[in-house]
Image (cartoon, rainbow, N blue to C red; front, side):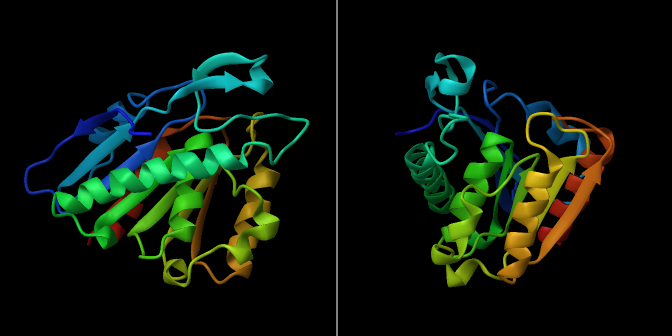
Length: 215
């Protein structure tokens, strides 16, 4: 499954951020945030479009989604998640072919996109520069220890969440954070007085975190 992408090139880019959107959005969703990040170095951004699929929680309506969500069967989207992660690996390899080392590639994702970013980065046999998990969670965290890669253990992780998120309650994100901490991951945690969205302070924090990764 080759993904279509929106790409923001930068002269002399030293790294790439592959940023995945949430349910029902598309690759343009976070495009406008890039100029607000106050980056200290030149980075390339790749925003893939998720494929369209029927989503059970939305009455079977077709929309861009990284995986199906069935509230009656929380693990029903597992195969979709694995397939989407394989597609993201193709994008990572494409960046490597452009001359960007894997250690200079950050995976980022909001909501559903964050699930895929975490899933792939935690299992990658070669470490990525880091992962930004925004308003999201670890899928099937109870079995995470069985699948994480040794190479990913020292990979920086930023988790950010809204305290009043009605879509993915912050308690679910905290449970995911604790699962990661329990496995020895370094997790930078941020929470904000917002819902299922991104706020100005979060954008500032994302920019600072990226600057640290590429210092």
